[in-house]
Image (tube, rainbow, N blue to C red; front, side, top):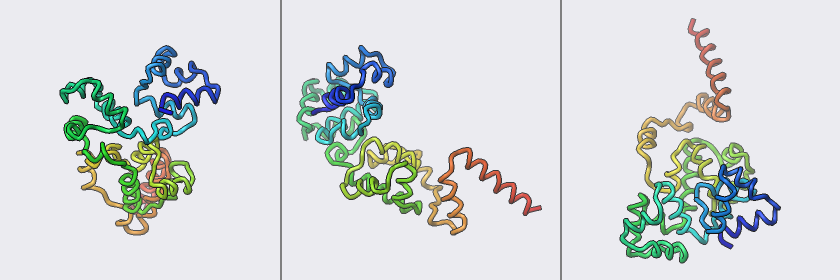
Length: 246
């Protein structure tokens, strides 16, 4: 089954009303029906649909359609259409459609497609799971954290995180959450290029493992707090420091 068939299947099996799904997405029922009829759902709605249906984004997208999904994601992110890409390459729209159907971009055009979408050729051709998982392990190590810490803060079981690494596969819908957890632009998970903001920030980063043990323990504790708790905690520290300095 393709993505649309899976969505229709979930709606039927779970007796879900399309009007309720449309309301969740913030679109009209007519618009949703048109998407399903034409088998063309905008990529940015996939994660919301998956959430409402109680399934993973990875399940709906199906890894077998890797090139197709990447093209749709990157074009949407760039605010461009398949027609725009076809015009840039000087090919018919049917050529882009054919690439998506056979899950393969012609070698003749692969470098120009990568250039237009501002990604590496490897990103278009390769499975990124291994690279993403390696980045996660590296970031955990740099911040003196463990996979169990990550699981706890993502509100999932440690076993589930370990399964990602053992199976070399991470659900797409967790990538934005993990990027946010490490305060890193999502492009760095999906693309090897670092953003200018991140490169400037990294120059001033002091990793927890490089701090004195006492300070490192305080920082690790603060990472577990929400914003209000952090402010309250810092206020207590400043108040205590002022008293001791008098």
